[in-house]
Image (cartoon, rainbow, N blue to C red; front, side, top):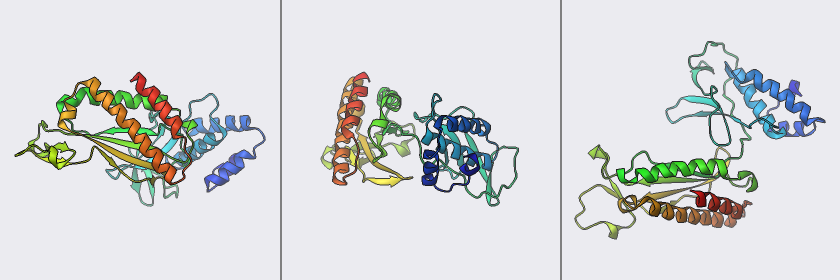
Length: 291
């Protein structure tokens, strides 16, 4: 198997070859040896082999080891990074590395191996681990009164990453990306102070501050990103909502999340996309009850 492992070009070829193996347990142990060999990858050749090993282990199963995925990506600053991540989006210690373009290949930033292995592209895992499909992101700017709620949202995000049972929902849909954007009228920098209002009539007469009219829920379209079907919804919080008591804010957001799942369910049904949104909603409700 190892003679062919690094030669297969498609994930379909890799899957078919692994499924033909007579002893999955023996193959798994062989793959573990390769994984340990390339875990401390020092160049692009070793990284790309580590990616292929993780793809193979995703197919044959990780047994009693914690599953990880090998991801390389280009960040917003234009730099490339790679690392091993768990199903809860945690990077395995010691595996995160930056890359620099060198000729027609890449070398590790600060690494000792500067050789050109004739490899032009960093590989990234094509069959990643199933992960929490309800993913929260909060804006970096928010009014001071919203700080406890923002902290509570971070706690909720961690609960969702750990407690959702994404293996049970199916693979027809990737994730619901939920962006929480807050008013920040009291920002230290006057140039970026503004508030959100949900409708023109909500703006007080003679209001002199900066503001934007945004709907409570701004709903995107079903679209693919890196091969995954996603739906993004932005929740805009007004100044008044940011000043509510914490428990009121949490109860309000619980209803928001359930409404978002209902919106997702309707969109998936229209597209006839197979996905167990009922199970997702049950698990979400259980997490929210503990939050």
